Amino acid sequence: MLLHHLPKFRFSDAASRIDVLKADVESAEWKILENLILEDVVEQIGQLVFEVHIHWPGFEVSGNDSTVVRYWYSLLRELELKDFRLFHTYKDLSKPQMFLKKEAFNASSCYTLSWVNTRWK
Image (cartoon, rainbow, N blue to C red):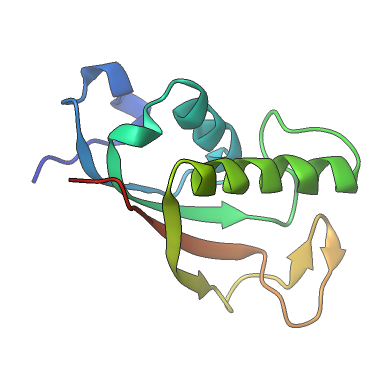
C-alpha cells in the first residue's frame, strides 16, 4: 500500500487510481473536496474518508450560514451524483457541540464521513 501525505502530495503525481483517500486536513476539507470534484480526480478514488469540521465554514469558504450550508450540501450532493455512497459516519463526541460557531445540542463539530465509489472496478 502506498501512502501519501497531502502537504507533499499532488494528485497528478498519483497513479491513475487511488484505492482509499483518507483526509483529516483541519477545516480545509471542503475546498479539497471541491477540487477533487472539479478536477475529476474523485472518479479515480475507490473510497473516500474525510473528517469534516462544521464549527466554522472552513478555509476559503465564506458567506452567511445558509450559503455555507448550501455549499457543503452541493459538494456532498455532487459526490452522490458521481455514484459515491455514504457507508459510515462517526460523530466525535470529544469535540465541542457546535455548528457554525453556535452551540448545538446533541451535535459534534467534527464527523468522519466514509464513501464508497459504486463505479469502482
